[in-house]
Length: 114
Length: 112
Image 1 (cartoon, each protein chain N blue to C red):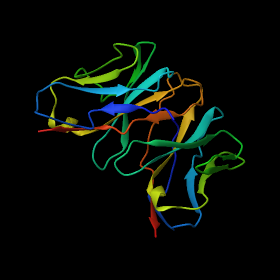
Image 2 (image 1 turned 180 degrees about the vertical axis):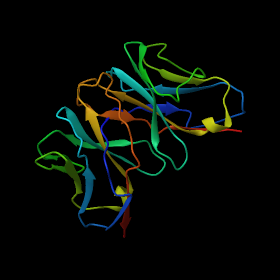
Image 3 (image 1 turned 30 degrees about the vertical axis):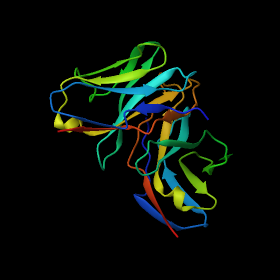
Image 4 (image 1 turned 60 degrees about the vertical axis):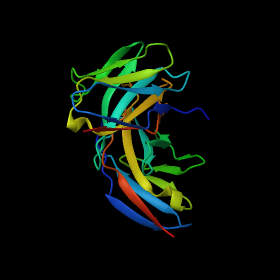
């Protein structure tokens, strides 16, 4: 069964550095998402992406965040100038696009900012 | 997304059925009821969804009340692998990006 893959599984970075989290969504899917989960808290929506542009973003998704689908297969989340509070699990998801189709999630990248 | 209410936690014994309730009294006519679960150290995983009729798949069954203001996820024989946080989410079929909004869910503990 096709799945969403995320790399790396764990990323450690220093405060102020830039990180890029990578995701390969399911190949025929049309909608792409990033979520994050701070340890012990809820899964929070960050951004959705469709037709090569952001379709919705949350208040968390401020100017330090950006997303890109550079080559039609990868979907990346860039965090510029990381802060300690960016430490979290980041989940990528994709969806086929039919109105009732489920989201498929990857197993996440654990980002640790020191 | 409309709000759902779930118990914070439930406990079950292995090989027994589990009924996980969800209240969604403000559900609208276009909202689908979705269930996801999150096993420890993994991403959320789709379980089942429905609109009005009860639904069955290889993982679980979904029983939807006639007025659609509540639903129950049924695991017919719980295994240790079913220990997870279960999320009941309403998703508007008329929405433009089909995103999900997660609540706190129900933490299911399965005892051997």
